[in-house]
Length: 312
Image (cartoon, rainbow, N blue to C red; front, side, top):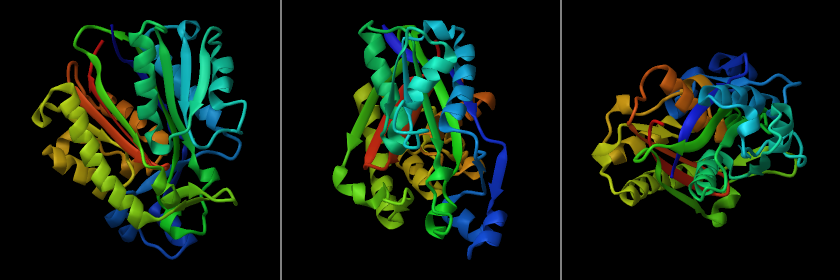
């Protein structure tokens, strides 16, 4: 039995924060932000909107797209580093709101790599026939841990949620291979400080990401027994356009075969890959039987790559 993505959904908050808005808030410019990051605007959740609220909106769409009922869900995995509170987890809250009565639930804290960790976990449960349907949500309210006085990080992040239902798919489709990794020695380069603010050493994270995104992409392709030129579409974590481009170039893919949503949403951490997946499906850039490579990196330091043959 193969495990694959059978339904997706996303939620983006209504409030848009543009680079022009930042020019009024601090000493920065639209040109500086765009040329260094690729970001033009990002979405910010309302003060009274919790992480679980965004997760719920995306999850409802994903379950409906999958053509199943919430009562059929066996497991809910929520990838986030910005939960409503330490516990109950976002997944616990989501399980109740969805009415997913038989579903187990837990949060995954792997930062921007969280959705990849979720896909790899779901694959094990489904292919061992322990569970049939697993809901994975990548969701972040990064605005609540952003230091709005730190111009090096404040301009980078946004809020949002992306969800996927993973279930049995036909032979040859679904998750073909994955790679997960961690380098805890780099944790000091990206973390939440005692004041509850996100802190990042941009130079070190950039070096790590450029190296790791390319290496893990190549390795997961080798694990699946396919070639780089077989990849139809690349969905990299939307953190920085220069990091994304380095991964694309490493694979020798043309520009039109890489997802780019960073200009609209900024870095939404665990939500960035599933949000991008939904956008690209809606625009018709992903088709039946396409070979899709998703790759991300994040605080921890963590990384993950997943190769999927699209379709049910």
